[in-house]
Length: 110
Image (cartoon, rainbow, N blue to C red):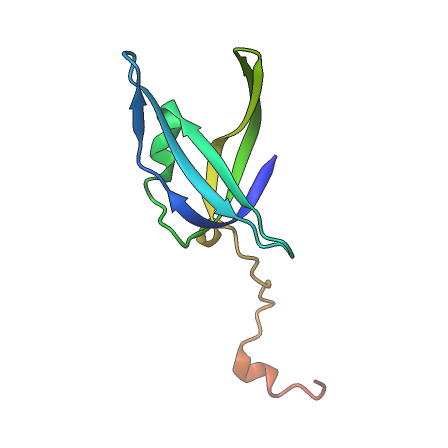
């Protein structure tokens, strides 16, 4: 699954417990009729994938849904494993047919 939007919160990397488990939170605001603020956690080595982004950047995040139970209560979280910025998306370029702009002006049809 994926969620796309603008980064509105970019948390610091946290180390938890004796094993120094790392996690980092990013909140994405979607660009829908009713925008949603979606919190996504990156864990372990994936936390460094957020280093090149800042608040305000447009991104697309690949996520997995995670669920667990603790003391009879159930929790759900979204775990990110890939992030791509708007500037990283491939741009489609129209193929050139060997005609320069100056040559195209000489054509009898437009």
